[in-house]
Length: 161
Image (spheres, rainbow, N blue to C red):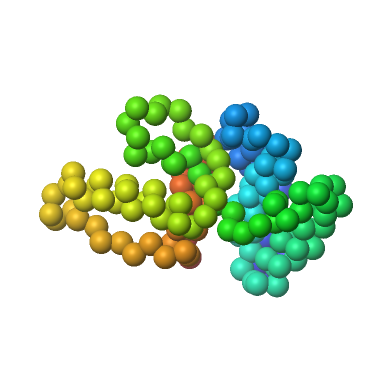
């Protein structure tokens, strides 16, 4: 291939299944929620490695969109809705919660609230030299959720370009 990072193998497919296994049965109320989780994992494993908008569109619409449309037509609008943000940090600021549930976080506002609380907690507990003043715009939130997923995965790694 002309793009060395476009080489996909069975290990990548196993990453999709590994991501599906991050979720608990309680967080998947309906089959459409599982299909949406599958879409997220396909996007994280394959889409995040693509470099051109045309390649991303082909994966998103022509491959994933067609599969969902053919196999689960009644769930199409829910499964293909954006943004698609998954993570297990919704309850990270709650010290009484020990179980981390990998779930659909819903919206940018929900994710921003979680990270704002985490940031304010960090800033209130740290010294003035370690104070962080971050602007959490939508792209930053997407990248944070992606990097968090990678770090949580066994043997997770990323090349940030």
